Length: 265
Image (cartoon, rainbow, N blue to C red; front, side, top):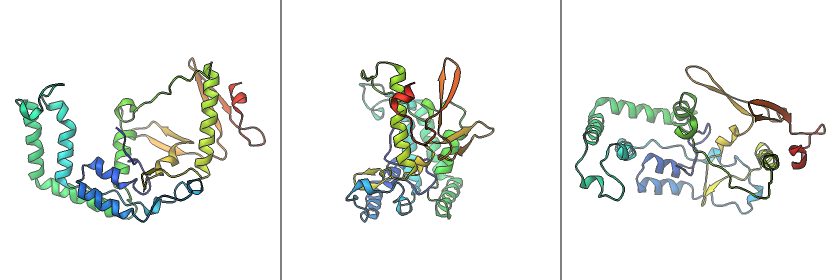
């Protein structure tokens, strides 16, 4: 599932419109947040845009109301507890399964408990605390990524593959062309000249891009850690071939990038 924002942001929350949709907010909440962005507009000349220029102006991630959260949760697990099958009437037209009834009862009981109000209050306080532009960011990174012990793909992240391109006749040619394009993209990003992303006229959070290159995840217990390395002095790649690891620099002695042909060699 794709969203017009990035949950794992360490800075200001990414486009609260997407956050509201993800969190199950009602339309009037979304319209209210849209009005907060009316002053942004689209840059007249996007090539002059600075990557993180909107970060400090983005709205903070809102904490959804309890009923909205409960409704979103129930909808998300409905396919797992519903008797509904493809090309059949909706679940409401069929006899509910015991799992359906049990889950519904658990949600209703939870909403009536005094604990739920305390938990909601803690979330709102966390959202209001200084330094928490995104109250969900650290929690999501911890539970979905750093602390998770299942494979990230497909449990936390999706996977994509490039379409076959017959202009590249060998794996080496294809890899060198891809690496060269990635290096040019990395250069724009590290120079903070990459154009910010927009959903129509709404700027999106770019904080996740800071970890796109020169970062490494270290396995640890109970949770993994991550470290960012200086991109000015770390310009090497590692190629894995038949269980062997090969490291090489992508820059020449004068500091310029290797060409596609040089990378292929």
